[in-house]
Length: 551
Image (cartoon, rainbow, N blue to C red):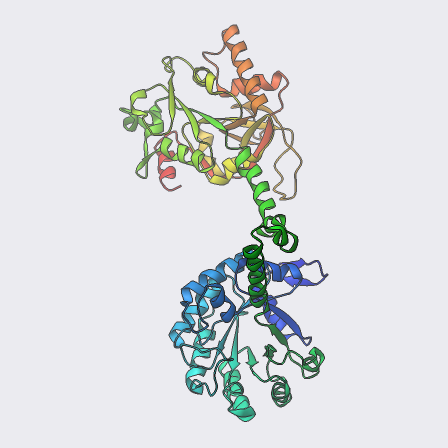
């Protein structure tokens, strides 16, 4: 699998895959640190602070859900929380999965689901399901070594990402079974395929943790959770080669303290004066939630497109389809169970274009799709495309699309056109000679442009349409106009003015859309080219219809 490398604010280069980045932390000769989080907000704060990883604590997630740390929250409920955490952050997450939520089968299913949600690693402990928190009670029973080894093997066999890590948490010291038992279990779990050993203790001093690390001698990465022995200097852990230190539950505990004090102050004071001076600003909430990005996205996807209209030219019969258009126009021919026009309207609707005017003519009464307006061109048999467009002149206001009624295209084609901010923009297929070899037997709307398509993703130099012509030689043609154009508010005004001039000079009845576009160019307009390379087709005959049904 290919990997990109990103430069982060701290100057370190990291691979983009979270699983790989966690494994790099786990196996680094330098001691790494990860911080507890229990929901999307706390995970964002952990990343914002500078930590390179998140510990999704079972205790903290349970507490945040208002239940005990005894598997009272189902694994699917925990999974939903993890999905929010993973979506909210770009750093790897190590999940505290208690005992794996059951036997080997439950655990291997969990591993698959975690990887699907972009979780980097999982930690399971060798106790019995349902688990009991390590700091409660004494002499907690432990899982059978062979059974736990089988669970580890099942998880490793199930992982679809080779860099996903399974950490085995040894609870022998917690249970009072001593250092020898802890080492025996750690060796068995290491042999079973565990990527690291989390050695746990509830003593207030780190003596047994340091003794384990010295005896273990870096046979595999060691992870610790110094919640109880927090007074031990971190350098002591570095000296014995601890790979990863988890600060395990302090964000949850800090939240409890802060919320209690804030609630008490508001309750007693019956006002917000203390709270407003001591809690995070409301603006901070909006920042960490990403509202600025949403605002920018709304400008891209809503503000510009919400008022975009479309006029679809669909007046002709399509005689080359013969019997298929005896009782309906070409736009209503069936394409996999739905009329061609239905699919075109759906493409517009998916892009946020809801106000559509369809110009009808032949068998106009059969064009009765919901959600469209129709205007009739009664002279469709003796007039051309521009006459049909003039019938919908009242709809040509503001930002407006003009489309032939017999085309189909992939969603990216329309999205590219809508993103173009030119007053007039046209979609040109630069791949027309390869994609449209059969079309050389028929009329093709060829385009001459100010510059050819380069295929360079970073090439942002604008190309302008200089001429449309069915008679262009192939050396002069830069592509084929697909019959789709966009006009800004100013562009729509230019279009209406040109239609008025064509009505005055008597040329409108017989004019084609090619004639209209060339007149606009001659009048000084500079239509911008939106190049595509295939991803569309038009329907003129039975061959095209067969392609459309497989499109």
